[in-house]
Length: 279
Image (cartoon, rainbow, N blue to C red; front, top):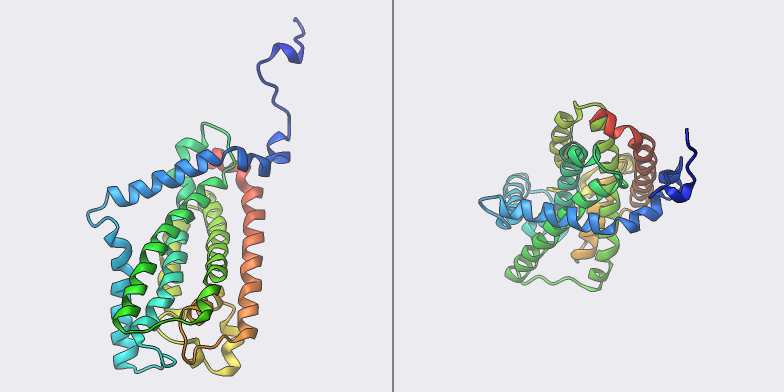
């Protein structure tokens, strides 16, 4: 058999090339990332009856229900803030997190036709779904501005810290999404577990109430829920009044967020090579 030199090949594929240059390839495949993000945005808003209005109605209706139940009936404290504003400020990061979790957990399955045909850093797929949910977040934020105008309520200097807490929310959503998207490829039962987790998480997270009502001896344990620190941070940044951050719990939540993010990347990279076979 005739031996061919490397120069006679159009392309040389080296073993381990994908691993060594994985993070560099993320930049090389940036256009694919933008394409997937833009495609998902168009699909979400073009193929629905309500379109963009759906991004507004979900947190708005939840705010109304929580205001009636926790504000009017249970009369829980809102730290000197009108209850609708108090709830909606927490709905923003929660909707971002829950939407990202739901979309990213199924992202690899719904894009199986791409994964099985071409090589690219698979992490691009769950990352693009988080960007779509970020668009929902920005649309919903505009409604919060209108509610504040209605109640003649204005934030203070702490508004400048919102980008930090938004970044924290993004890291939480992305890290958890990496775990669930990877697990969903191997264990398809997770597509039924995720909606349940989102539903339970809404009620155990301080969305409709203040985390300050949790007894002091339990607050640090309560902060094991990483969304506690994210939601409390958003409220502190967006609202004035008696809103305070429980710093011990916030630091614990932040540490857990970083652990979820780093371990999510590690587990995703570990299982990524088997995605094409399992899908």
